[in-house]
Length: 171
Image 1: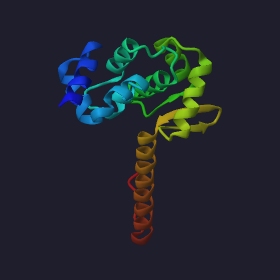
Image 2: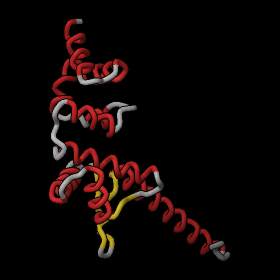
Image 3: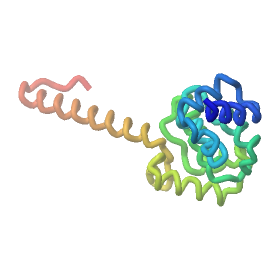
Image 4: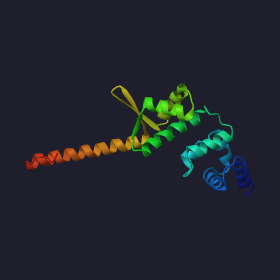
């Protein structure tokens, strides 16, 4: 119980509520302190109810710099999720660069680096469409590809059915 107490005291010394402290401890156990000191943005990924803004507040309190690659990557994911909440499957690369720079107060060079890392980590997918790069959360891209394949299968099935029966398609 001594370790639990030490972790809880550490977390609460940074203004983290006892509710969040318990969730953090339950997720990371004795590693909670090192997770928060190294990359507190993992909280937003790993713990339900802790979002980017809460993780960002904690990160700034423990001394993580505003231009930390962890912060920039988490901020980009947050912005893509907000876009998803507003009905978008992707954001154009130019838009994510501008919005990220404004929201995070970061240079475009570090944002581009973060986008490259997120792509290598397979958290985002970049699709070239004409002259535009579209940035998707990987999960949304997989869903969009799956749905489009199913729609094409249905169209193909309906076309084959129409050929066999000789009737016209309804579309």
